[in-house]
Image (cartoon, rainbow, N blue to C red):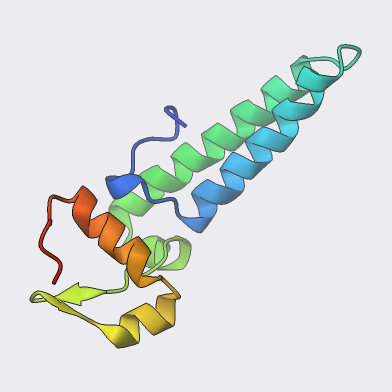
Amino acid sequence: MRLMGKRMASQLSRNEMAALVSLAAAVGIPLLDAHRGIIAPIVVATVIVGIQRLVAWLVQDNPRIEAITQDTPSILVENGVIQLSGIRETLVTRERLFAQLRSNSLEHLG
């Protein structure tokens, strides 16, 4: 995860989640079975991290690639008002939203 770069508010995009699952699948089997080699998972991990870093580098310079590879953010709170349409659209529970707001130092949530 450290090699893939940091994300704001610890959010993972679809690409990052796919990379994380692929890394876990590639590295998990050799860890559980001593008879499996470690070279193939290292190569797979290197390729996955390399592709992830390449996509991150391409996204910095090209808005079209960013639009294709990244999710669009949904506004759940605007001017201090909870946007119910955004909550319905994203299927985020109020408890999860309030927990995120509290983690951002908002204590009085009404």
